[in-house]
Length: 75
Image (cartoon, rainbow, N blue to C red; front, top):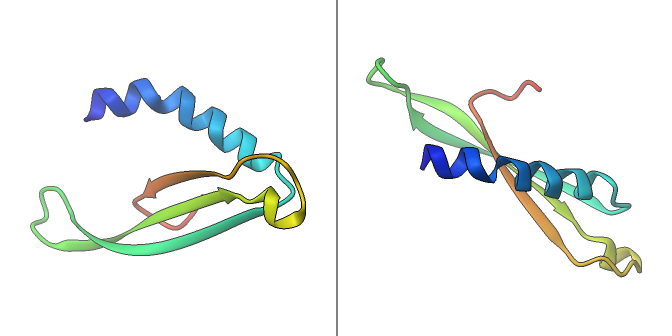
């Protein structure tokens, strides 16, 4: 899975750049419990969804969504 993620990173960055050019951008943050490697206990991580929704504002671009997993809220 790590190799697949590495290979798909340019596509994800392109899709995120397209979303950032949109007039209708929506974002959502969801907190997740994940197992901290080596610690043997759970910690909080975050799943972000970034959505281009120009059609809801009268635009013609198709919807697009990018999900990002982050181990902290900053950035």
